[in-house]
View 1 (cartoon, rainbow, N blue to C red):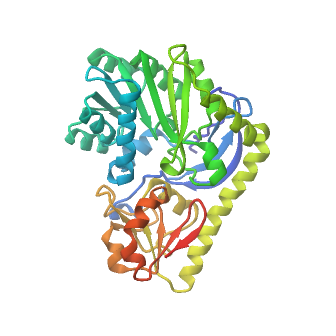
View 2 (cartoon, rainbow, N blue to C red):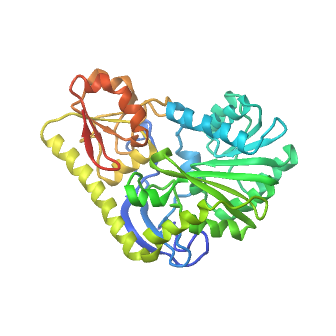
View 3 (cartoon, helix red, strand yellow):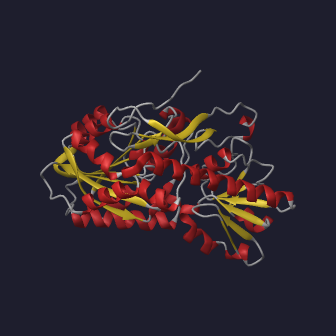
Length: 411
């Protein structure tokens, strides 16, 4: 029997304690061809554990990275206006903050289709992408973005330095919490980064998730980031967290700036984040996390109950956005094609495929053509952008179900 248990802390190697069990799910980005629907669904336990020693919160089990990123990965972050605006602002911010010039190299780890790097190139900075998702690397290269088809580690970092020199900035957006070996990744950062360089990480912030329930647990995200735990990781590699800030991205994220020790002044924000984490979670971690886990289970059950109730009443239900998080949420909630008729999607990489349980993924315009009674919003992290586009559907009586962070019906 396969065992991908994460029994030890990914940061300090202490034994961890499990506090949330969501059953088993398939890889989040598994979207099947019609001919593959009869095949058995390979599932992996999904849950969360915490480390009593350093405070790290992490998955209880992992999925082999090749299964997730080589076999099942379709996410293209370039397809939303929200994403375009976010990455434009980030590139411009980093160029101004660190006075980047056309002599400086920016390496984006987990570069996807190259959207962020195209913006850096446009504002006059040298670029290079690193990503193991071969489908997306092909798209990035067609976009003219030089991209290495690889996981990032010390060997990859050495190859880059030999070919192009060290990077002034390394970005890692919604990827660092996906990394299989954090310590090997950090060894690569040390090799690749210039002495005065900065490693910039953006990921969903666990404290925001803890307070708002505005995210979900899913297998791509191995770590549920708290500043206190990750400051210890950086310290172990001769680096330090010099600043951090909250950003609204993906339901509430954190942006962390990491540099070699004693190069930059450490902003007071770092200690302020740690103080809040201590007060809300870490001071009474077992009790606080167990209580929070109960809310996650209730959130799942409330959504599933509503959808099944509507179906019993004879209502038609579609869904919007074939996201990895939404795909996972449907499966661990027991929602399949008997409840949801179809999922609309903008990305051509997913249209024409199916969820493992058999819900078809169709073009966005199908929602307006079929006009189901209800539509479940599976890309809730882009709700502001999407709800504005759905007025043709709601104006004809369609109602939108937003499952996260709090179940509600709009329209």
